[in-house]
Image (cartoon, rainbow, N blue to C red):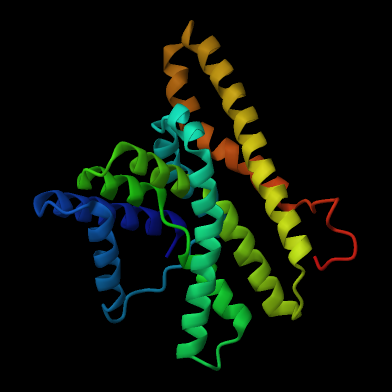
Length: 247
């Protein structure tokens, strides 16, 4: 099955489940999870293999971009400390807890693989958090903290996953290099996001004065354009921490 067919089928399934969620008045992330779980039990379904680059450049930005677009950055800065404590501390604590539980249930599972599993499931999804929290009527500050944490926790989880896989393959782990890699990824993500955002905003303002139709394609290419330089940045070694550490 080709990539385009897989994406169309997945989008169709998402649309059907979203309509069903409105009919039964449930948050659509819950219905999507239950729908995906149900599909996994259907026998003789074709194997679905998506190219990771397609997910990283097109699917993931389209999911996160609206959540970031409608975030109140004034409230985000005001609650930066609890957001970072959750995005770093809670994600790492969840990774450790999941790894310990997985290793306890399956003793033959290597610790590195258990940590990789923990890193995969530890960060909550930004869109799911926003959709569910707004239906619960929680205080505004808690809503801002949880939504902000869900937007920035991927850096912690991705670095933890990267080093869990490296430890699984090489059998070595360097906490100093891991900390440096995290700072490198976080700084690169913030810097590249700001630069691309400012550049795209400048282009949109100039184009909107003469060609209003250009704003739509620019809005479509803005999220992938942020991910392409970020992917290149993540491949570069953090120079101040790379000496004498595993790659």
